[in-house]
Amino acid sequence: MIRALLVSCCLLLGACAGHTPVPPTAPELAVGLPLTLHIQRQQAAEQRDWLLVLQAEGPSLRWSLLDPLGVPLARQLLTAGAWHNDGLLPPNPEARELFAVLLFALSSEAGLEHNYQPGDWQTTAQGRWLVPDWTIDYRTAVDFSISGAAGLRYQVRALSGQGER
Image (cartoon, rainbow, N blue to C red; front, side, top):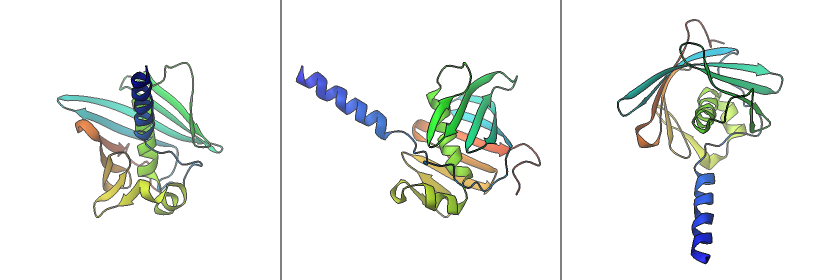
């Protein structure tokens, strides 16, 4: 009985520690909104294409992930550092993780310093790193790749003419 309780507690703590941090307030972004991104997800031999629309709505950010046919895959509203379902779609944990790392990747340098804990991130010569295991390599502010654990990789590009400030 005690072993089962200990294992359950360890699993719960491990699950909490593995999530990408989200700042308590929306950081200043290095790009203008609204923004539409083309995202290519690659893992092993599997590749998927998605569109992401990011919009500001007052103090909140609305994230809408769509397949190439326009079918919604995830819709989330980030308000006061917490994700909220937007609409009737089921929860999508992978999308929330992607949105959290994209928020970090799109943040200005000042936005990082004011909204993320110092031990949770760092800048490198090629880009940035964020806990638990995300690496962002930039070509431009709206053209970059994100690498995560288990060979997961995202190529992110703004649709033409978008994201420039």
